[in-house]
Image (tube, rainbow, N blue to C red; front, side, top):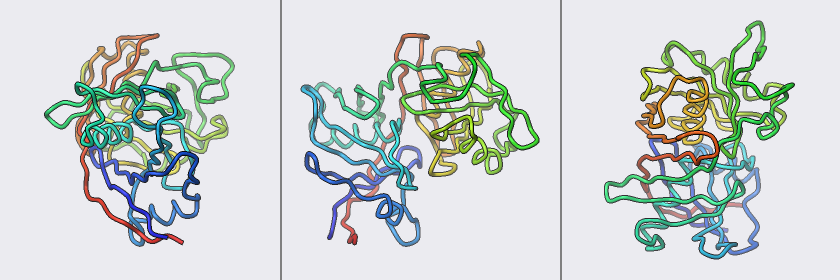
Amino acid sequence: MRIAFTKMHGLGNDFALFETAAGGAPLSGAQLRRLADRHTGIGFDQALILEPPRQPETAVFYRIFNADGMEVEQCGNGARCIAALLALRGLAREGGLTMDSPAGLVRARTDTGGCVSVEMGPVCFAPAALPFEAAAEADQYRLDVGTETLEIGAVSIGNPHAVLAVHSIDAAPVARLGPAIEGHVRFPRRVNAGFMQIVDRSHIRLRVHERGVGETLACGTGACAAVAVGRRWGLLEPMVTVSTRGGELRVSWTGPRESIWLTGPAQIVFEGEIEIS
């Protein structure tokens, strides 16, 4: 069977977008893992499955699958890529549209400069929202990883994130600590691990080890999570530039009960078809 796809990326965080009819069977986990392979498949961090809208006034319902075939709740850069594609198809009204996802509705705005902003909803620090095993909600938690004890913030941006502050992301042991944090027993559904270096109150540098993927060049929800945690710690302003290895994102969050917004570029790489068994 041959299937069509669109390859897109947001600052190097790359996606394969597939479209299916309402109720259509998604690709299996094994098929997605083969397609995600960068040597023998398409190569991507996440697959985005686009379905017809399920609610009035929405342009699409989308699902997200990591490179390991696991379905996840949300993806910030993926949402921006979907919004950019739909806007090119003329589905945006006055530069805006609303999308639907497993984590809820996502509003998006596009501009003439090629940037896309998405409203990722209110952030949630309750441990049960991630989920995360903790006696009570706190600004920081002690997490034992091997022989080390880390101080982390934990937050849900529709998907789970652990954030720790580092002096330098260049020297941060992302390859060693990222997988250990991702699979920690206190995160029953695993977690994305963010390593945040605060440059000043309106600028951070960030590396993210994404669950089911590994380190990516950029992570949209990871950028939102880092800013939310940094704001909770009293270290950041409401508007923050987030420098990733793939480029710069902008995050805006005025505080509790308010939505957090993510802004950055989204680009189509190519369109194609591939044979799957």
